[in-house]
Amino acid sequence: MFTRVTIIGLGLIGGSIGLALKEARAAKQVVGYDLGRGVSERAYKISAIDQAYVSLVDAVKEAELVILATPVGAIHELLQAIAPVLAPGTVVTDVSSTKMQVISWAEEFLPTAVSFVGGHPMAGKEVSGVEVADANLFKNCIYCLTPTARTHSAAISKVASLIEVLGAQLRFLEPAEHDGLVAGVSHLPFLIATTLMNTVGEDSTWSDASVLASSGFRDATRLAAGNPEMYRDICLTNSSAIVRWLDTYVSNLSTLRDQIAMHKKDLNEVFAESQRLRQQWQRSYDQKD
Image 1 (tube, rainbow, N blue to C red):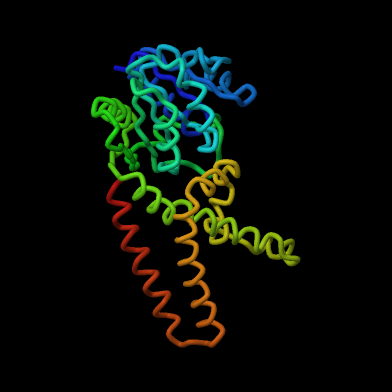
Image 2 (tube, helix red, strand yellow; image 1 turned 120 degrees about the vertical axis):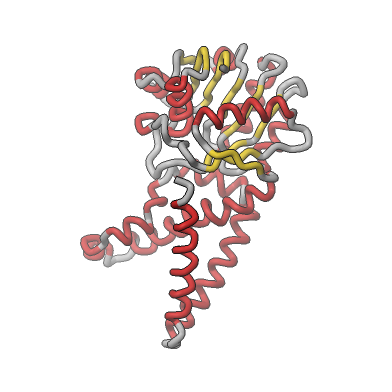
């Protein structure tokens, strides 16, 4: 059992971690801090935390485990702010979608007596906020850990224990490998959904077309409802990997455009291959549940 867990950032992910810890009675005390007006109080009301703090320094004092559940752009300043007051032996982890930049900041700002373990749960919703937090959000999802040569084994074990409480499946990845993979399967889909929504929604025909848009359009643009600040920070901290995937996607889309323009009869082969790959992945995904 954890003694004192501090969650900084009480949105969907932070709130859900708090609920899961409380439901499993895996911590003697779960405390929280959030800059958003009234967010900490709402987290307390839904029992995601035992105590809300208005001072970041007070929130992390004597913490055994500190979880950074904010947009990645905020972590740079957070690490600098908490570093001087963290007790020796404290473990700090995060839930950010990008890892190399966050780990670089952690290694720069945290004292050697404090361990950092990069983490990223592959879970979420298109909506945000502690109001939609769910103790079961992480059940059977992949939870990535990205330790480095400087990460202490005891700290890895502590965060692995958290993942076990959440009901997630632990997967170890190198930080660079993680960032490259999620750029394709997480960040690129958001950018595609965003571009599709903007392309159609900003067209002069949208008022009429929107009446015709149905479940296919809804599903294809679902990620465009995501938190703009979060995705801005993701793009700024993982730009190289994202641009590589975008270049490949734009090239494939351009090829498809030319095939359509030239009335190529082998279009069905392109669509059949996509169908095969999608069905293959869906079967593998369903087996995890």
